[in-house]
Amino acid sequence: MRIRTGKYDGFTIVELMIVVAIIGVLLAIAIPNFVKTRDTSQLAAVYNNLRVIEYAKDQWALEYKKGTGDSTDLPALSDFLKGGTIKSVVHEVYEPNPIGSPAYATTTVRLGTYPSTTPISIP
Image (cartoon, rainbow, N blue to C red):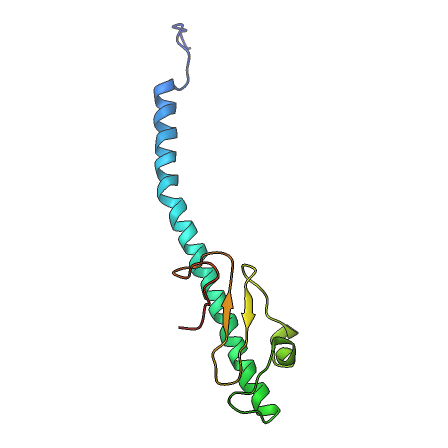
């Protein structure tokens, strides 16, 4: 049998404020890590797309007996790309460049150490 003492069961405002403060500190620590991880994975996807373009350029040059300096574009490489195209990660634009020159991508957002509109090439 429970005796009523007139007190209410529940949390005090101080206890609630402490919990909210702890959650705020945890979010302040976690959010920058999530943003960095997202940027790193997007940059890795761009690097992978550039490797795919380089591979397609090599295959295209072998197939059509082209050499260093011959120019190409993404539509010409479509037969050598899986799915016929490169899927954009952050609305980047790919420039395949002539055979023997590395392909690069430009984007309007900052990725890793690359500021926006700076060409991104395979390291």
